[in-house]
Length: 167
Ligand code: ACO
Ligand code: ZN
Image (cartoon, rainbow, N blue to C red; front, side, top):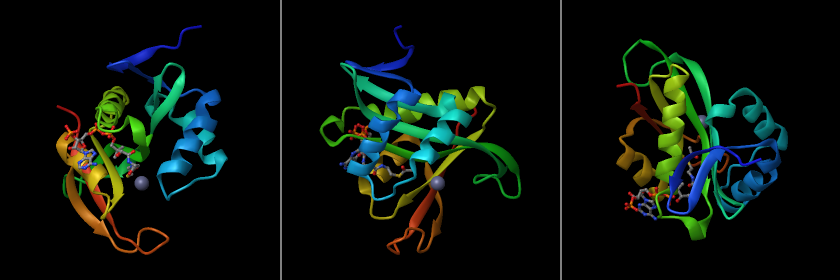
């Protein structure tokens, strides 16, 4: 059966991740990011948040993914307020498919799904040295709301970045 495409970027199709796609997602993560997770973690996120776990595909090959949780807690944007918020746990695009708008499309598609889940904002952590990713998030409208020292195992700090998604 044809899988439902949620968005297109040129010849790339964006659609929900399937359990069968998880090995390819893990491979992209291993190839592109220093932060790895247990296989179980991916299947858990997919089972709990299938709407915001998306992949980009070209001719049957998975070239990118985004995985995002929905959380409820303190707002990153309003002082002392509580909010339902998306948390982008991980996003990656295979190197040769970068700079074509896939990362942007994945975040935008994820925001759309988050809105239907009642989230008003979205946040993430990113290495302070990761200029590509910070550029992507800033272009989308994310603002740096904090810095988490020694956030990563190797001691690097993270920026906490957040954006309002509800109109
Ligand atoms: N240098 C500067 N700015 C960049 C770069 C770069 N190399 N790549 C992207 N950007 C910025 C630009 O503003 C770009 O817009 P433009 O091309 O019109 O100038 C904008 O981001 C959007 O680019 P896209 O094509 O939509 O992004 P892409 O598909 O290339 O994906 C991503 C960006 C996901 C950061 C990719 O580079 C990647 O997979 N990197 C390795 C993994 C990674 O760092 N993931 C994020 C970790 S943080 C987290 O997961 C929460
Ligand atoms: Zn996080």
